[in-house]
Image (cartoon, rainbow, N blue to C red):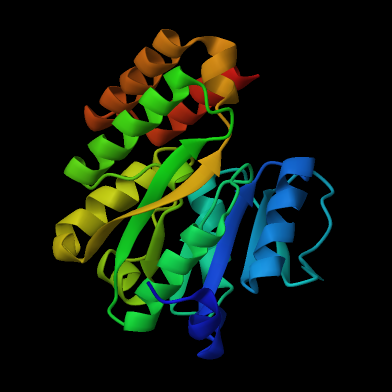
Length: 239
């Protein structure tokens, strides 16, 4: 396996922009941005706009934008403001490791337009969460449907095939996966490197309840429920 140093010499990381949709500033977000800066990536944070929010600003290593609260819309707004060939979407509670970055840089170095995700791993590391992660990663590998927790990445050329990233408030990861699967099935990559995220919602709401709730939301979407209705239900529950 090639080293990060060798790949960095070719400055492949400069052709990647990390897009982070966020509801508000947080310690988790600042920790992620610290990692992104350390690995040398440019980034765009797209915060859900509040009344009287500040204008878009430049920050160390990237941009901090404001956009209406909509995960898909926020991601699309970030993509519209960058000119790199590769886009990497991370949730604000994601954590990076060297293996994760190395695998992505190797994909970029090959130069072939691809899309895909990483293998989710929960920070808490309990046995139940390891089982949950294993099933999430297996399902995604077989179905080629990614979730935001898995850190979707894609080449801009493939986004053009699906008329850009879907602007919708929820299920944007599933919708983007469905469209990319239809347009570029053979370009999918299920990378094995871990992307660490929080398992807090599983612990707080219960494993069985969370699994059933998430599958219910997903089936409702597949059977025609609007992203707007699901958005309202999801964030009402989170509150």
